[in-house]
Amino acid sequence: MTTASPETLIAEGLAALRARDPARAAQALRAASSIAAAEHMPWPALAQAEMALGNHAAGEAALDRQLALVPRDVGALLAKGQLRQRAGDDRAAVSFYSAALAQAAVSGLPRGMEGVAASAQAFMGEADRAFRRHLDHVAGTKLSPAMEEALGLLKGTRQIDLQQPSLFYYPGLPHRRFYDLAQFPWLADMLALLPAMQGELEAVAGESFAPYVTASTDRPAPNNPLLEDRSWGAFYFWKDGAPVAENAARCPATMEALAHAPMPTIPGRAPNALWSRLQPGAHIAPHTGMLNTRLICHLPIRTAPACTLRVGSETRTWEPGVPLIFDDSMEHEARNAGPETRTVLLFEIWRPEVPEADRAAIARLLEGIAG
Image: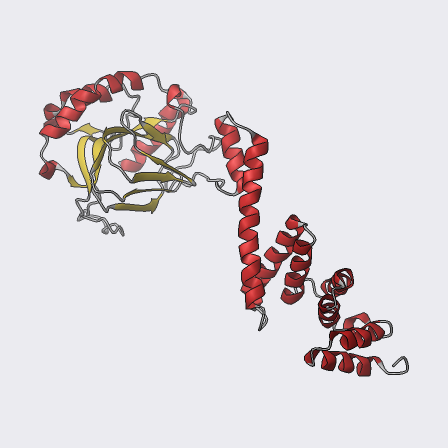
């Protein structure tokens, strides 16, 4: 055998593999590897023969030779992942499996490797869950909100969500989905009026709510599935900077509550304040607001089960007596998957980080745009 050419030895080894004779295949391919150019060797075949004989270290060495030549060889990456998994090196196994599956998504999976790929995917899922449990354990409890978010980013359960306002971007503001209610002491005065506001809601007939998304004759109709749909309803107290007199007269407690909030005053544009009603089955599709200089406040008037608000990668529900204050310049959506109607008092406030002088300049700009 030692006088045979590399080509002959390789052919003999491949034929032995097809005949399911790994011993003869390994013998021929080992001999070939000592005299053949590395780029001409079928390293995966040698690895297969060695592993079939239980020579895992030798098989892994052959795979390493192949990956040095072809770093994105899907079959070799999967096989290397299997060997690292067998050795108990879960992190390395996940790395090789991830690389293999990412490449397979681009170039395809070699025929016959479907089962290996499925096993790799399952292993990666369990390894990810185990890693998250490990992180929770080492991080401990009673974390600050910032550390909770940092841990979520590390675990992959959260994302870095950025402000993407459709009209006006003010630089340097923190990218914060929901705000701590302790920053807004005026909320206590509003919540003291909550029972009276709930009574006013009960007194207002359902037909008093108009669709939130409407069309205007002097503009193209919005491309929104809830256009003219009362399942997302609005009952305005302030609209585009002016009070809605009839509704305000019917709901004095709600108007008194709104007087406590630092709402922007921009002629032709703000304040805006309304009861926002979401009926069962309604879904407000993902979208972003126009500005990042404001926050949206939701004061729950009537909560409902299975009703959620997602801002970026964080989802919350409306709880009785617990306002939500969030940055609507991040992508957000709402969904009522339950059997009851949810109604909140929705209004906007200045972001507390924006200084007074800049607020005045922003108001002038937005008034000029509105005009």
